[in-house]
Length: 104
Image (cartoon, rainbow, N blue to C red):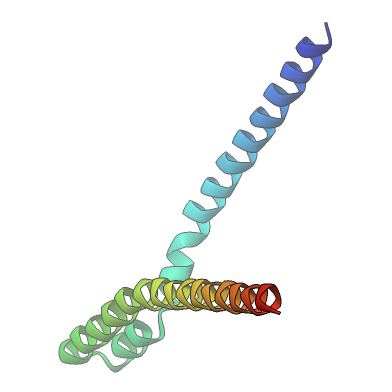
């Protein structure tokens, strides 16, 4: 009987999360076009009414959007690498200290 309550609670919480996700997607769809027009490069290029400027604005926007994921992954990788190296150094120092204590 107790497991039924836990399963029922879990199911209710999953339904609540699903509802929240649906609402978030609907809000994103409704507010998405307003956000897309907020792109500074495209907005400025459209204001100047030059097709060359529009193409340049789109080009730089795409470059910026493509570089951000690489910057995030690179930063995360660097932080993880540094943490691993520090832990290796800490373990090596600990082993050296232990060997020194055993020798004395």
